[in-house]
Length: 225
Image (spheres, rainbow, N blue to C red):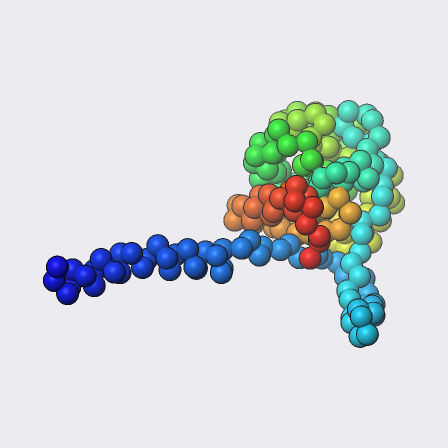
């Protein structure tokens, strides 16, 4: 056998070995979701040393009425899974229809995954009654028990939007109206694990990926990092 042939054979045998070593070294899934909305920095003792640790804001529980007429709570939405939160109003002519079109994709992707729910909060509860929301939910193809359109007391909804999800009040918008094109990923501990522009398909692709990551963490009992 010629030297060139021997060299070529050696390289062919070496490639799988190198590939195995690469995957063994770098192939571990290190994808970790961040946590958003920091509250404060605490000092915690680890062994003989003190370390600084960020405490993140959990979304407070809420009780609002869904398009079906029943009361839905934040604890129910987050229990054993996660939910997506968005803020809209039914007569919104701009970003709201775009966001809901993208959320339809997410609903369809996780149609058979009971741990994934969607919650769209109206910021115009005086107009968006249960009857109006029921009609709107039918128009966007919301699956009962999967995608909730929620209304309630105006003060409670604004508290949720501004104090809990920390949405800024847009300039030029009527007082009290805090709708947004952002979509929030909330985990089972009611922490925000992702914030996305609901009008951008690329952001929604990232959202879908990160939902799957979070479900994988649940399935394998991995700690929040």
